[in-house]
Length: 118
Image (cartoon, rainbow, N blue to C red; front, side, top):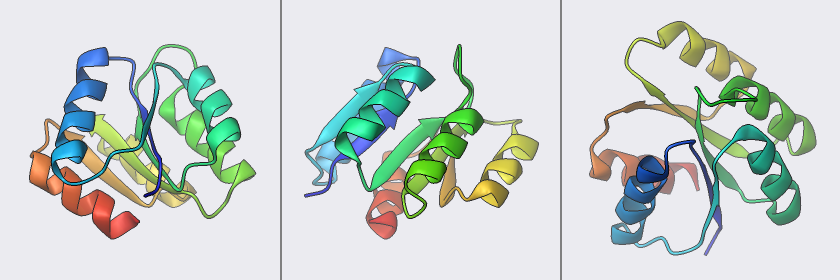
């Protein structure tokens, strides 16, 4: 099974995502709390899918997206954001993000999106 990199500065959100995906049959996760850690772990593990929060301290999700796609253009990245960040989501999709998920989300929608992406 493919590893999934979950990037969010909020530990509770990483836990919610991990629990939802575990219930959906996924079991291999890598977690990062900020953009720098995400890039470091991405280089080390080369996951096929990244769930990436847009708003984080330090490097933004947009900056991390650019770095990931520069290293591995075929990587599937699902951007996660709160309601009201439509312009940023559009920018991420134009840059090459595979999809986006608006928080709060329904667990089954997340699982479906991940299955479709892998």
